[in-house]
Every structure is written in structure tokens, then in C-alpha cells.
Amino acid sequence: MNDSLRYARHIALPRFGTGGQQRLGKSSALVIGLGGLGSVASLYLANAGIGHLLINDFDRVDASNLPRQLLFRAADVGSFKTDATAARLREANPAVQVSTLNRQLELPALQAAALDCDVVLDCTDNFRTRLLINAACVATRKPLVSGAVIRFEGQVAVFPNQGTGPCYRCLYSDEDENFASCAGQGVLAPVAGTIGTIQASEALKLLLGIESGLRDCLWAYDGLSGATRRVGIRRKTGCPACGNG
Image (cartoon, rainbow, N blue to C red; front, side):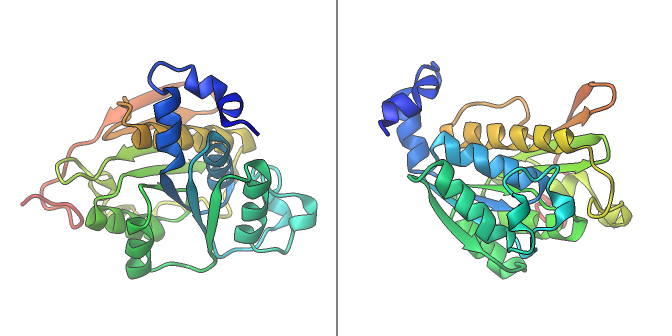
């Protein structure tokens, strides 16, 4: 397919253009977690024309995933999420290079994976993993787009991680480890899609150098009321990950 036709609506954007599309084609992203957030975010990134997607998960598709994890089909139940996702992404855009990491990553492996990419999307569902991803992004100075969803609510936070701003650990402390994990909790399927879509949009802006109003901010969405709010995040002195004193 002719790229100028496929990406015509991107190229028509004043802050995008042909140069932006070419830049995107040379860019890469690491998507960690292929659930309700990661399946949507990865599909948008692939269809947008990103050059390389590195996807990570260690779980298999379950029937209960199907309402919100839109890349998967009934026939995928029992398959590894990385395998099913890679197949769908390559089908959606054969030009994208898709690499898979089908295992749980600890800090050294997360740092190595982050170093290979231009932006990291945290689409996981537990606090411990989020802290590890944040630590890897701070250490490698890779921008992080963090997303979470539970019940009718979702949130996105964007951390450029250039050594001057806050990080995810500035937002949450060790005491927050007792927060309910998203895993096993009820989730309204379209809310997961909303958050995954915002994550993809923020990742694209980071890759293209387009300024975002969510930089160093937490954006929260209430799926019941339809209300949103944005809260600025300050760098925390003594933060275990990025502390400046």
C-alpha cells in the first residue's frame, strides 16, 4: 500500500506532515502488558506507522479477557498473548516490525528493553511491576507513559524522565503498595479502551516532539460521570527513584 495514501490523515496535520510520518517510521516503543490497555495502545501504534514495536507479556489469553482486550479472538484462548498480539499487529500493518518478550521481566531485563526503544508504555495491572518499570525508565532516561484502569475509572501519567522532572515513584509511595490490583477487579471494557487510546496518543506525541498538556501530570477519567481532571506532579525530594536530595 502507498504510504502517502495510508497515512494521508496524519500527513495532513500541521504538526505531523510527511517528516513526522517518516520520523515515526524510524521510532520504536516498548509496550509492557497486553491486556485491556496494551492491546488497544499497541494496535494504534502499529496502525499509525511506528517502525518497531517490542511487546511484553507472559500470560495466556483467557475467555474473560475477550470483552476488553480487543486484539484477541475466541480462537486465541489458551495462546500466549505475545503470540496472538504479534499476529494481529502484523496483519494490521505488515510494515511494522514486531518483537516479543514472552516472560516476566525484572529490573535488569526491563532496563535492557527500555534502552532498545524510544518510549515505554506501562500497561500493566500491578503496583510492583509499575515501580520496576519506572525505575528502569529513570535509569535509562526513557520517557514513560503510564496507564491504569479499574472498575469505571482510569488514569494516565506522562513522565519524560530527562533528569529534571518527577517520576512515577514521586506520585506513589511504598504505602500505596496495598492498593487493590487491577487484576481480578471489575472493569468496564470501554474505559480500558479509552485509557489505552490516550496512552497511544501521548506516546506518539513524545516520539514526534509534540508538546503535551499531560507532561508531568496525572490525567484521571471517571467513566460513570464522564468527568476528567488533571493534576500536576512535583518532583519529590528524596524519591528512591529520581530523588534530587
